[in-house]
Amino acid sequence: MCGIVGYTGSQEATPIIIEGLRRLEYRGYDSAGVCTLSGGTAATRRSQGKLINLERLIQEKPLSGSTGIGHTRWATHGRPSETNAHPHQAGPIIVVHNGIIENYLALKEQLRKKGHTFLSETDTEIISHLIEEHYLQSGNFEQAVRAGLQELRGAFAVCILCEKEPGTLIAAKQGSPMVVGLGEGEYFVASDIPAILSHTREMVFMEDGELVLFRDGAAVFSTVAGAPLVKKPRHIDWSPMMAEKGGFKHFMLKEIYEQPRAIRDTIAGRLREEEGTVYLEELRLTDKQLKAVERISIIACGTSWHAALVGKFLIEEHCRIPVEVDIASEFRYRNPVVNDRTLMLLISQSGETADTLAALREGKSRGAKNIAICNVVDSSIAREANGVIYTHAGPEIGVASTKAFVTQLTALYLLTVKLGRVRGTIDRLRGQEMLAALVRAPAFLEEALTLDEEVEQVARRYMNARDFLYLGRGINYPIALEGALKLKEISYIHAEGYPAGEMKHGPIALIDDQMPVVVLAPHTSSYEKTVSNMEEVIARGGGSLRSARWGMARSPTRRRLCWRSPSTTSGSRRSSCRCRFSSSPIISPS
Ligand code: GLU
Image (tube, rainbow, N blue to C red; front, side, top):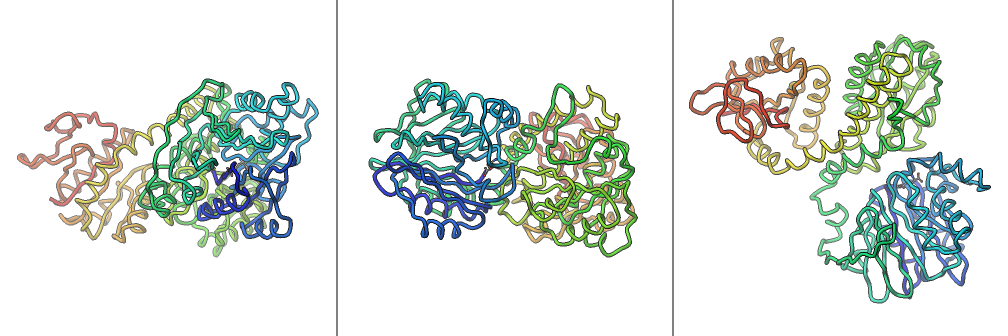
């Protein structure tokens, strides 16, 4: 999730690696490390915090060697610390890794039985031990890497060295990005283009299940299983700024496209599909404690508060526990009813939100148990809470939350399944169905992201509107709030989110032909009711309904509501729409 840089050639590796890591610094990380090979000896420097700490360490204790690997870490397993920082070494094998190894606990257990001792809390360290184990058997580095990688489940981009083979570097990927830069008699490998762009613009993009072996001045590509591959380099003419954003115009857009990956990482290793339940390793509350909960109080701010409102809906619906949702700054300054039978959920992307932290402390002082949902491992809220569910969104740079929000929803969904299974409100079969639906979610998101051109057209059409209204019912009401918040934050257009059923109690008075209304109307039990709300809007002159692709459209000739599917140009009133993405009709000014 964070940064990898590797180098092999005739130059000193360390300055190249450090420079590469610096170019990835904008993404955020919690620790960094470098390992180089020189004369059959590996030397590693690691340090917590900023890259400058690592640089100072290297100044004090220089590294030499023309083959090396480096890493900036965004912790997923194990707190940020020097011991948990990469590279990790087991015997002669040294590894840096981005991603999450789902089956690391099972592998760790097997390796422990074979006598391996682990020094860190990371999932990464098992990779080095696993490869070492194979190396002990075969004595062949390449074979050991291939065998070891085939036992891993999850997402990884790895760079691997072997102390006994000083001129060899192996890199491979499965689910995490990796690019190889081709130089003059030298090779670069990185998790992201900007890290190596100043050295070469000829790059090979690795695909899942592929491996590259650098040895004797050559790069040999193959599948992890060993089938040879011919890879064509691409010339990258991006400017350094463009490269940082992965070719997207801005970070928020990049992060929007990272949402499917972020959800996959958040569920990775946590589903127990057979049993229809989930495993949340850092929940740290026993089933008995979860059963004893009488009330849940969710505390959050901003976008996290919207996620909390969705959480209330999920937990009440599936677990039948009363849930209250509070904005942290309100909670901490009133006299909340919280006691030892209350479970508090604290949601914060950074895990440092001051009001949420204060609310956690307030609840703790009253005896409440608590669980944090955070994106930053070992952040203050994560540390102080009894338990934590980490969202594995990776660093979020865009100011407006996108991938962090969807992973918060994912974490709340996982918790709902856990609570429901423990308390018996979700049976095994229902649990299995819920998990299967969750597994499908990233693919739906991927499909939705292909609508970018339509989205742009809609945005162009409504860009001069001064106000927007977002409507939704049930679980979609908080999504309407979040939509309105996003529009405000990003476009500076005033927007309000409303429960659709509340329209008649006020907001309807605002509707005129200048007020676009975004309605979230999926085919749930409240679909018909939501459609009635849309009609209320139209009856008050609230704009015409146009975009066929987006669902409802007003017939230009008959001036009345029509449903249109993408394949038809006219439709009959309320015939069902075949477009999967018809769930967000836009009512626009005519
Ligand atoms: N899961 C690994 C760890 O926690 C890698 C994290 C990363 O991608 O930076 O150390």
